Image 1 (tube, rainbow, N blue to C red):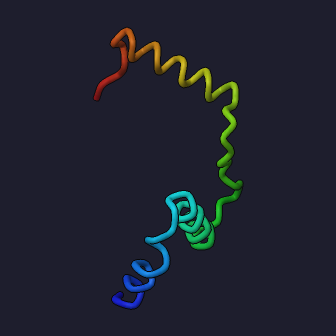
Image 2: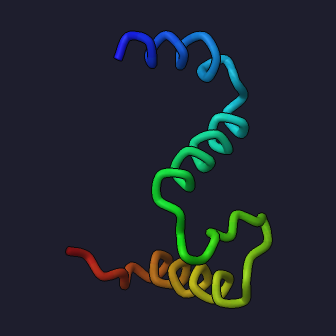
Length: 67
């Protein structure tokens, strides 16, 4: 594993975080391709906004489900 660690330290670690995440996604997609590609856009669907609003309201009122 020393060779992999060396590669990471010399080539990957100096990359900006966004590029490292992009590289990680490429590697993971190659190892376990999804049936449907994951949406990584910055746009939020109406369902996303509704979920966030509901969660925010629960947090504000202290009514979240705690396990």
